Length: 74
Image (cartoon, rainbow, N blue to C red; front, side):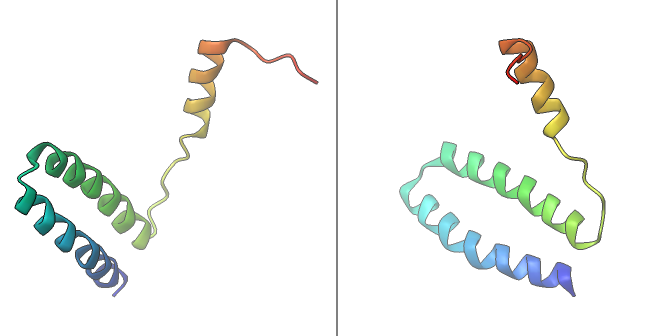
């Protein structure tokens, strides 16, 4: 039931946006928009069926540490 609700909400917001983008013939934006929507829809469905999604926080912390170095503020 939750998957059905998530799908309806996505369709409610996506269809009007896609229609207006096709009318403007802005195909680069359409590809970007649909790519982001596909990722968020997939994550929403995984969350709806109780799949544990790992946090990206450790990876982001490691990248920031590599870029700016170790913080020594205390």
